[in-house]
Image (tube, rainbow, N blue to C red; front, side, top):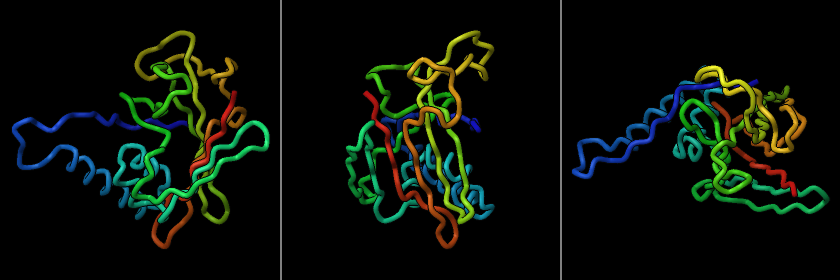
Length: 185
């Protein structure tokens, strides 16, 4: 399932200062959205707020994030990153679309992200994300064409996942506990 949300528009603080910094205001708004998502038990809305805000990611995270890079064979690199230093969140919003924060090919501005959500019986949330390119007829702002994974095959949920983010339930919401990446050659 793929969902779209309103774009997070970037703006710089005015050079002359001001009563309120735009970034601080945006972060406050995203923290409010995240709190509302928790109250309504909407993990997707919480995740959208995480994409848009580093403050939300830090607030709704375990004390440390388990970060893994898994290779095609057995090799796996693991590390635990304190939530205050976690800067590897893989998804960002650009205009109306999800994009990877670090494209597979440096400078690839046409790489987008598809996401799939899964909720376990124990209320653990898994967000699988896949890098894609679009081809085919562009039909307005909401349809970029047909999504193809980076192997050049039509996107099919679950076939070629680039990463997985895990959110575990807390007493009143969810928290990001793991960021798993699948490296390909």
